[in-house]
Image (cartoon, rainbow, N blue to C red):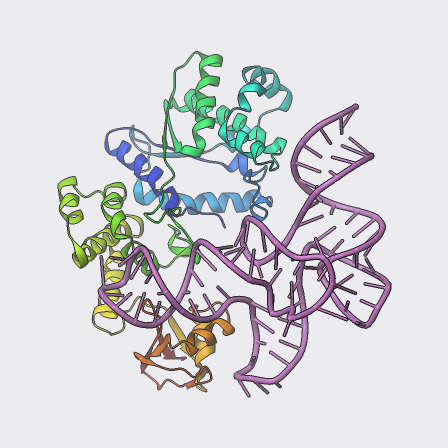
Length: 366
RNA sequence: GGACAGGUGGCCGAGUGGUUAAAGGCAGCAGACUGUAAAUCUGCCCGCGCAAGCGUACGCUAGUUCGAAUCUAGCCCUGUCCA
């Protein structure tokens, strides 16, 4: 179930800003290109999807964009298009004859995406090699169909965008433009949006809003100002003030960051609920409503099993190790026996914590 | 199709018959210190089991051996060069 994670947020915000400035965003979905498979060579994403699944994915991605952009028929309303519209109709011979002459292998070999693979002696299939042609072709189609003049993308799309500009100039004599954004990293140098626990998804279905909020709340001090500028609509002078906070006061700025981004991406309500839960859980030592809940059967559940079931540990073994390390607490009391039987009285709630950050609620199953 | 090199745990990378569930590094998790930060130090880091223990694992399959990630054969995959 592919979707968008935080790594795509810069692009989305850029579209948002441009729409605010009176432009018409066109969101291109790669429905046509996914029919061929994913080019990145990552084993599992390579499986071919049915057109139904592709449609579902597009619909789910659209719900994310709808939070950031205004869709509709007006002159500056955003539209979403699927490159399947034109790619599927392409015939190989026509493509070769019309588009082929405008690409030289010599030049294609100079693009980083290709050059790196060759230098590292990694495989690069003909399929992948062709992606740049299809993507260049997309830009031309967008220019003809929608009078699109500017294409945004990540820096990895530089080659594709430039090829599109070049192809359209040669075939149509139309001048197009491109803007790319750098791949964002955190102050630690890690790619944004990918954690070992999993990606930070923009869709609610794939990441609870509370966790989404926590991701931002836990930003590195050094990232706060930059993230506020990139990912929120707050006025710059306000950001400057927040950013200037020192020591532990910067935490206030992180809360603002988490609230603003969550509000944009998940809605006002989700942001408020997450903030309230964080406040009671961390500051008050109580239980917030947004915490994950585990329903405990009447006969009780062993501590180790509870940690696994609620998702704090990946396996019983890991849960046991953490328990032995004294990291697991019930109602803020460390419990070191993995076999400890937890029983919850009807109507009562027990707080289960692993470490300082993972908290959950145990309730009697009804 | 031919010659050569290679396929090890999330990633990188040692290991060439036996204390090898597999060195080391990165990433990750936890503890201490803190501010739900960073840095640092410490511990953990395949699964199941309360435990003794068991089960899986070094591309795949079959074999040699008391014993294989390590040896043999076939196959699959990747790269380099040749056609």
